[in-house]
Length: 418
Ligand SMILES: Cc1cc2nc3c(=O)[nH]c(=O)nc-3n(C[C@H](O)[C@H](O)[C@H](O)COP(=O)(O)OP(=O)(O)OC[C@H]3O[C@@H](n4cnc5c(N)ncnc54)[C@H](O)[C@@H]3O)c2cc1C
Image (cartoon, rainbow, N blue to C red; front, side, top):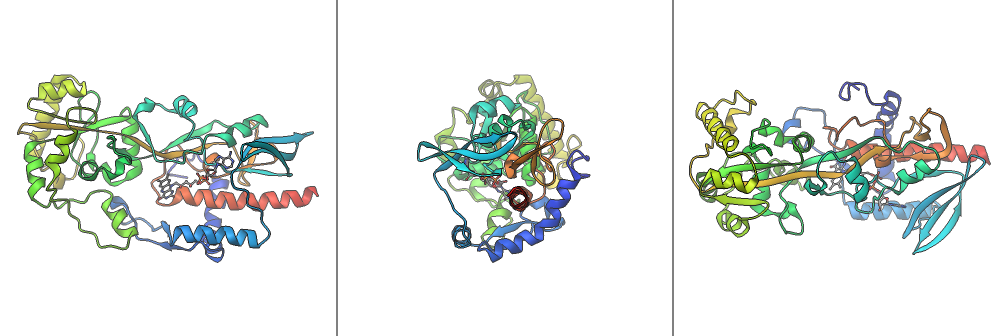
């Protein structure tokens, strides 16, 4: 509650917390085992551990579905919920599209759990505060906002705190998955000098060690920034090991049960890699700062001032502007060619929109329960404030626990109705 300045729903937050340990046990009994891992982000080392990693995820989910069917459940794949059917204010069924054809399924309760609206281009554009071109989405593309639409159609609120799960920033080249952009993506995970669209420094770059805060900073600075470096840095990395940690190293290593290296490089092919991309978005290389400023469309004066100021701070090894750890005040930008690489806002999807109470029952704008309609996971508001929380695993925990709670409440509701 303190974290969200009490703008989240305390009753709802409490039921999620109270349910969480039991849900982990319930998942295990039903086929999906998890393990509590050491904090995977650099800045969270001394925080309570919360992150449960799925063990053998794909088999686990298969077992989970098999157990659901064995217990008498009916699993309908290729079946998209489309419209809640009501008679006299009561839910009587749901219209679905199954293998391209409309069908009606009789039911007294519907739980909307289709993952938010991150896959809906129009709605993303409407709710995004940055240019959609600056958004790289890692989220579920099939989450096209159907549930939120259905919620509105039955009188619910579907735009209560629609939040983008900002998560890090990406270097998007033509490669299929930007996160496989080898050395370039690794450079994005380091606290180098970052400049905004005015060509000015805008943050303590070691924010890179918290993925949510890094993502928020990128979003807040307008959706993209440039990390810049010079030839000395490229030459250094080509031949040397840098004793910094790439911000995703801990995640990759820990989740794969490997040892940390706390090292970056040497990157033997860094020069070739950069040269093969340089000259167009998102990588530029120039012999003069004038030309580089032109490439990235920032005022030349700002770019020069930013580098001059940064070099002075590096010389003192003290960042009196943004207080970056002096360990990272190491590489002045002095030798041409100079390089700039664009990093863009990145989202894991959206969460929120659906106004619900602590039973995950949908509410109208005057907070009346819509009987038989529930919204959970990325469709539900209540726990998040304005961004992806910096508590590892919380997003998934919210989805599992809210889904379970809504399932139990819906089952009680249906029994009462019968
Ligand atoms: C790359 C990535 C990494 C992540 N890492 C973490 C992490 O480390 N920790 C963490 O806590 N969270 C993480 N998350 C977030 C977490 O995965 C989500 O919070 C969670 O999956 C949300 O669950 P959900 O059930 O609401 O939606 P989803 O898991 O998106 O499930 C919704 C399902 O509904 C289906 N669907 C869509 N439309 C319809 C329709 N009309 N009818 C029926 N079905 C429909 C979709 O295809 C999808 O299968 C990550 C997300 C991503 C993308």
